[in-house]
View 1 (cartoon, rainbow, N blue to C red):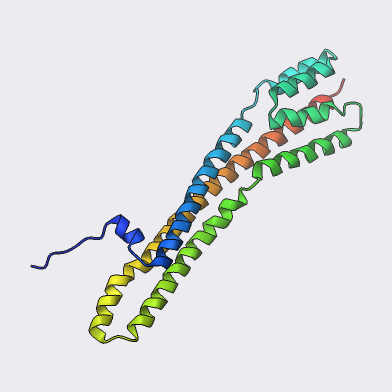
View 2: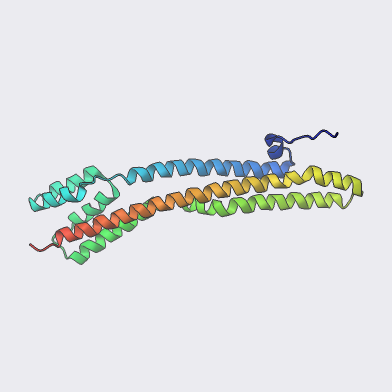
Length: 214
């Protein structure tokens, strides 16, 4: 009975030629960059999503007491995207409601752009990594078939069997990096959407507070 030999993961990844190994190393570095970026961005967004649940109540109480500057100072101490948006509104009290609303909406857009910064890196990588892996696989197969065309049939079969896995390795790593980047991107986008929703809620509630009948 013929003894079956198995290929280790290390041999699968780095047992190919220079082209295969080079593409795999690039993809691994991109995957590590995606993981590090995701961790840092997720931590930053989770920190930004923490807001005093009594922010609007405290601001309302201070305004009822006529302590506008105290309300501004309270928002500065909280230093969340929601409180910074409310602070923009407080600094424009006495002006038309439409002007206050526009200022707060503009600031909300600034907060959104800051939260979304560099997230497109993951979206780009989720599409580029599989294509880079596939390109490496195609180039390796093209080189293999070019060599096969110059050899006899027996050697050709052995060469194709020996080199076929080399074309799979870059494609597999590219798909893995692309999949992780896609998942990371969607998680961060959901965090950004939640942050924007909270800013809009606090903006609308603040406008209701300053526009309520006397």
